[in-house]
Length: 321
Image (cartoon, rainbow, N blue to C red; front, side, top):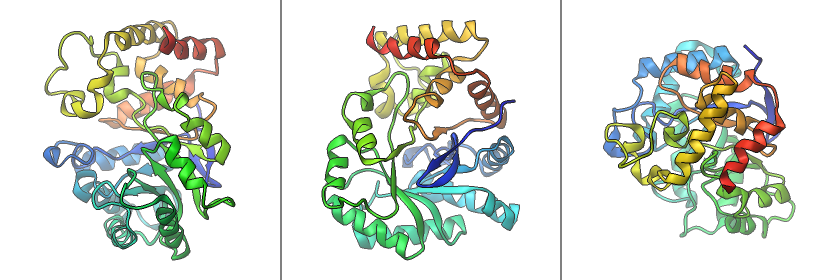
């Protein structure tokens, strides 16, 4: 298979794929879905395969499965020996519950470090904006985490262009350790290309790490996208996140993706991920998988097809149809 590409994120070399751990022990941050994700053994197998593939970035959050995701990663790290900690980079998030106030963030980072069984987080993200805490205070808090040695670099997730403008205003020289934005972005959801987020990232010199590359599974091509969202599926479990993408227009875009994938002997998932890898503003793509085999197929396909500007533009233009 092709070798994994590495790019700079906050001056640190990260693989172009990050293993998303949102489904370790549950499904995202939903308390209703605790225990419905990958078991500890299944998660450890995914982590092992990710490292074997050259993936060095693992993405989690303190609220994923109420902390179980971090604990599962911590158990894996402890069982693989000290050398593994030197080989992988760990990213987590804070603020989805409890906000981004300084006291809460400092307490949560210590809980995350304890669950992960590490001394320092390589990357830390604000999970969502906190209306009760001004952005200059949030940035000051995260910089304090960097100075305290608890975090190496930090970023912001689920933010708007106006959020980024507010972050830039009081810090003309740039906050110490502030490096990137992590938002939802994929072939069906390209809002950041038109709402000013990508423009703000370019202006502020911020990297971009998209999550949900397959739009909750819609880009896998396994749904007909006619009628109601099927129960018992991942997208059915997270209707709050994905129902808005279940449209006739997106159904046509998925059919175009499937036809192009067939031409290039790829799965729709592989081609959709390939498209993200070749977006000029993308640093690392968060990918999830249900099994090591799925993960390997996705990475192999996304890296195996060379750059092809005509194909990339053909897929991109489906948003304009």
